[in-house]
Length: 139
Length: 139
DNA sequence: CTAATCCCGAGTAAACCAATAGGGATTGCG
DNA sequence: CGCAATCCCTATTGGTTTACTCGGGATTAG
Image (spheres, chains in turn yellow, green, cyan, brown):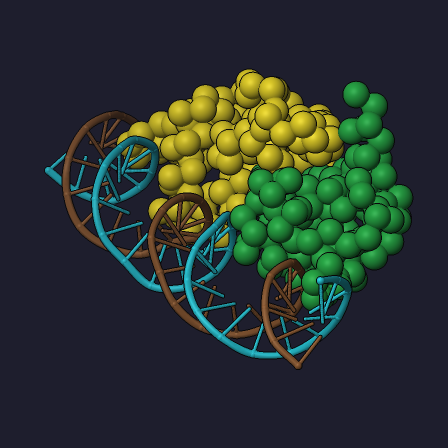
């Protein structure tokens, strides 16, 4: 029941961008350094986040990345979904999957997985980058 | 954010045992058949569950597996922990891990992962095999 | 022009997963 | 007793995923 480094790194990188929101683009190199993430690896993740519409990038000298929205409008759940796929402990409770289950009792365990999915989603979608910034500031 | 087949299969197998609790041991073969799980693979999982003290086994003809406790006393969380390890979205919020974080802002994301861990634990530890049986019965 | 920067695709070593293979030990029953 | 049913254990395998690394191309501010 672990998220992968993709999700961890992604949230850390986005948090870094959130902490400097409105101050112009931040180059990959700086994010990677400050968050201790392999630069090339992070590059791939940022590409994914860009294609998901969560960050904007500027090429060329003085370029870098910035959030596509204000920190308060980006939910952690969006970041995780972009990098790790649907938030669902088992495939059959993914959004948009046919709920018909051939196993009669499959449904018994299915309800459980739905509850688990919902509680995970609730946490991840009720927290925004702004919340993380506040928590970091209040210490 | 998926649990592996180990966890899925394990819960299904334990549910099967719960549905027939008190009716003597059920052979692996039957569990595997009813739950459509590879017999040899399930054997490994049952070994793990036995060593975790969640099931008892009887060898020889007429042997099989049965729950070590009443269904109401076995939490899903125990099954998952036995088969998948600690319930924690990231390593640094596992129980018993040093909470000191070298990254100053690591703590900002750490709080998030703790909340996620707690909400997952809450669901998995508040549901017992008896709950699954009830849900299956009420339809 | 050039240095800084993003962009992209390929390759890779290690780990993990789900399953298979093959045999050994126990035990109820005829 | 002897055998079939059953659990027990270790090893191996093929496939996938993970977390990177490598090398080069495109863009742009100064």
